Length: 189
Image (cartoon, rainbow, N blue to C red; front, side, top):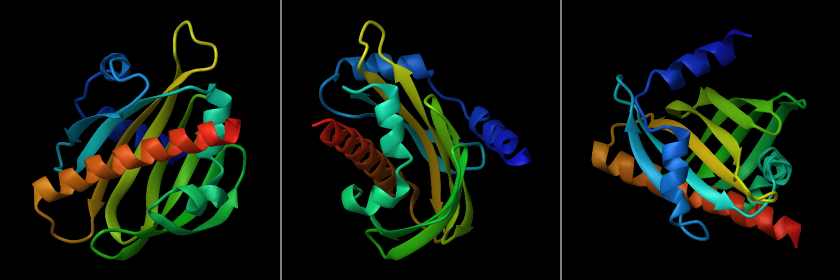
């Protein structure tokens, strides 16, 4: 019960543009690119805010996000996934990843708030920090369209120059949102 409060406090502590600011900027790229904005917490942990338009309703998009067993089929970084425990409102998951510098892993606890958002925090692994959230925001005036908004902080468990860390965080976030969007649309076919 305390974990969601700690996660919310950590996310709220970082200065950032509002969700609507992010989506307004992404509006210009509605059918294309992911909008990414770099973040940095007071403790130096790098993160990103990202948003992409998805031509699908929130329920469909949410279902793609929480279908963890399917991640290795469509997510280019996930080599293996182990859903250790899952319910409609939470899941404990281990991700084995193929990263640029090495194969690595982390475990997360994810909290599901269908269909509005999913939040996560690392519980174990080869990173110092992995935490964030997805927000699924209906596109005004479009019944079957959603803004997929992501805020994520990651810090590897090794020394990496800040500009390199930021580059990979932004690239990985962009790729992840593109993959979630594309998999959701593929499931609609």
